[in-house]
Amino acid sequence: MIWLGIESSCDDTACAILRENKESIEILSNCLYSQIDEHKAWGGIVPELASRAHLEKIVPVLEQALEQANMSIEEIEQIAFTACPGLMGSLLVGANFAQGLSKDLGIECYGINHLEGHICSAIVDKGEWLADKSFIALIVSGGHTELVLLKPGFEYASIGKTRDDAAGEAFDKSGKLLGLGYPAGAEISRLAKNGNRNFYEFPRALNEPASLDFSFSGLKTSVSRYVQTKGKEFVEENIANICASLQEAIADILSLKAVNAAKKNKVENLILCGGVSANSRLRELLTERASKNGINLICPPPDLCTDNGAMIAAAAIFRKRAGLLVGNREVRAWNELF
Ligand code: KG4
Ligand code: ZN
Image 1: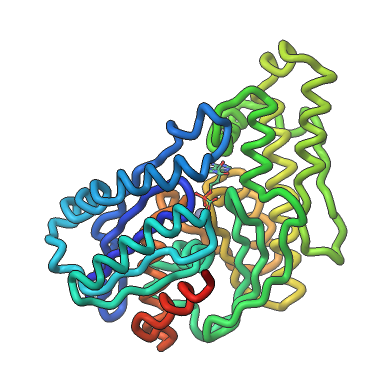
Image 2: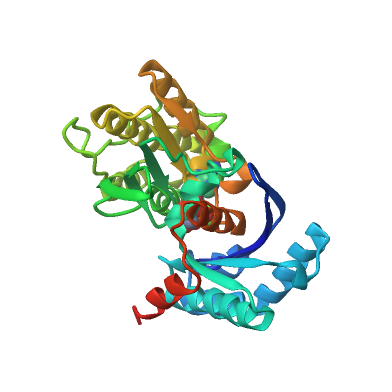
């Protein structure tokens, strides 16, 4: 079965083509247009600009995905698109495009939850949902920071979330205060490689065993005060050390709570996913702490950490195999929300 996965929930226009085999899934192409340059000047994502860019780029990105997979559009047999959550205008472009294409080609089309897509990005190489196991997923992106308990049969329970900013937002907003570009996560991670993570101790909010919630707005305030007190010149001279300390504060609290969540719920498998899961210090700390506690850590490959179309198609494949996708029903259910 050949699948097309479409992702347009935020500022990436993405299309991927996957081949579903009996026991495995092959990613034949995974293409993306990043709108970062269009939003950079504004220091964050402008929803109106995002939907316009999706409209302009979705056809070229699909053409690129077909070319890389060496396929024609008629060979696509199923379509999956991101239905929610995300920016309304951006979601609508992907949804309308997917539904129009499915009608034109006479094939099925499924609406997928973006966060479920991120979870599936970590297990796409396994070819199946962790069907017989319960596991914890730590979803860390620009818009979300959530600890989810997943039980067999796609049963979800949110067991912890951020009370204010998401972890990716903490990277991006702190980066802006430090004079870095947008989004700042990858740049902070790069600069931190040459820095001392014990240079300054930024706060770890809600650092108590009883709570699985997060809070990052205090961290942002602390970075702002630090910059004001120390001055621009000091910050520029010590940028690597400051980035390493900031990254440590975020990675420390995320990894502590994720392992705590797994222990509390007596599960042996932990998935780390979402854009921030590309952060190597977070992976390192989590690997260390998970293995000390006998927990198996599963992470997506680097190219599937940030938003992409392959994870959306993978989620549809896993759901279909579990008998949890029925034709266009999910698409209608989603449309009814408007
Ligand atoms: O999942 P994603 O691509 O989009 C959303 O659904 O939000 O995540 C984007 C976020 C941004 O905040 C970005 O700064 C962060 O992921 N990010 C990173 C790294 N790469 C991307 N944060 C920390 N370290 C990285 N290496
Ligand atoms: Zn995402």
